[in-house]
Image 1: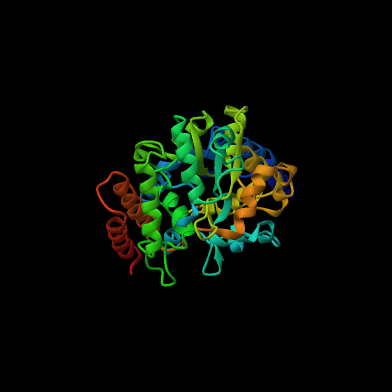
Image 2 (image 1 turned 45 degrees about the horizontal axis):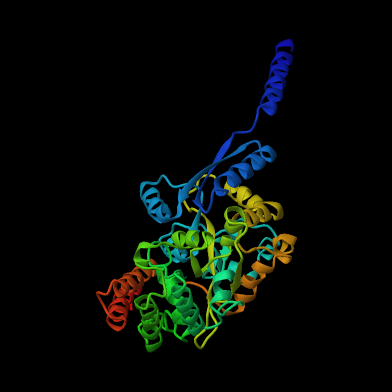
Length: 407
């Protein structure tokens, strides 16, 4: 009997020892797109706060420059070395879903999780009735204008129409400056064309998801940009200028007007606090329109730590982390609670972007969208370089797009 007591005692000691051992640690890896110098520090801070509350889960952050992000993800996925969660362009999501790469997250969500979000921003991440993407970043586009330059040009309240833009740019040119920033290099070259296309009453795709941009409205829109370029109303050589280049020119007081996102507000406050500027809607020809965009967080289907990864995402999309991210990067709020914060409700410049949302267009959720965007980009650049007419360039691009779209 004594030996029995010994075994019982030994078993009790072992049980106590096992119960006091820390639980097995898990690591969640996240790929993050670089938005600004604040991006990396934000995610590292959130990872540290999350780990403090969840000691058995480590979060490793990998920050990647946006132009290289899609290629890196494709390479990592092909090699089976991808992270557990990642930021992606929402326009890539359908291809990720069709290829079985993205995990539907509905089963991981607690009651009321979806209600955290502003509906129009969550919708692009939902495909076939399932939620594959959560909107981490959102923005719309509007026209920034230099108040000093535009006042001298006779438009103290900014331009309202494309005719206003041309007239103001003509005066700015006469004063030795660059009037309208025409972007034709890097990310969103195609989108800069869509501003003119949409406001001329045209569209990118038709109801059958076929290319519609080689329409009379599309030809008129691209011809308008080309005419402005030929008249010297834009910066010279637009195919040499990215969005960031034009934003820098604007911050330096060297550019009268540029269309871009709300994050430029934060940049101006930090880098050019004395710059006098205003923000107005995208100029109109016949139809008010702007571009709204979300970037989404996806969970990869091959993640081996999905419960831990979801716990991390649940934390990221809670109130305080969302407010910190959106304020720091200068985006629009995607959740109901962050939208109530004074940083957004009392910011008159951000309200301009919010007021544009009823007329906003999103990139179509179709497979082959990136190839379509590239075809449009190539067409726009060829017109600006003088190697093709608007009609010929857009007709060629539409044929390439329809091939990519399977039409």
